[in-house]
Length: 116
Length: 114
Image (cartoon, rainbow over all chains, first blue to last red; front, side):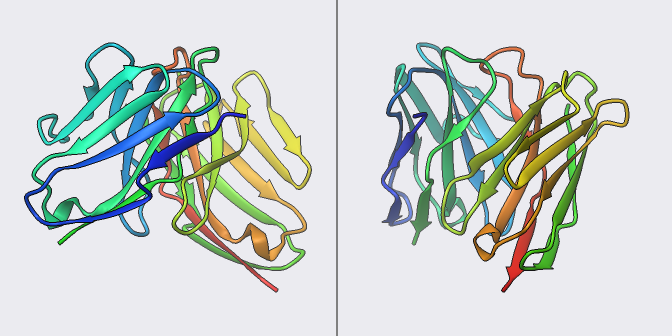
């Protein structure tokens, strides 16, 4: 149980285009999902906290107009990287916390974004 | 806010030996401490966690200890195997609600030499 999926697993896009990444909790409902970014050989950096039915909470330094987050249901959150630039190339990972529990975060497999 | 430090950054051990990774945290209100294993190109996988009302927890070859007074916790892997090679992250959270942030340490790259 507690499986989180992400789609796509990797994406290559041209500079200036937008990319949408989906995060789904497959066998549980998640009131809260988190979006992280990870650069090579670095730790996970929290970008934003996504709560179902409300606006996401962004970490300091993360542009909310550039990284659009939508959490429309208890099993789906999306991250849209708008007007992507090469410096946005990174590994994006989501996690979800079951609505029934308050602690454990289960992570998705990540999405590798390369902006040319 | 919470700050989590982790040592060492890299660790090489011979197969069969033990590996120990140590972490410290700054926020005394943190009460939930998960450990994640991340293999190359994959998302982190929860391997064990401990809550502040427990001093030690063990799951087969993996154990975690917590010293709340000193604000440090450690991961112990015994009888290491090559498949244990990965990056390990410790983390800390207040875990009062489902939207409490989990703050990660910088990671330890573990190599188990056959």
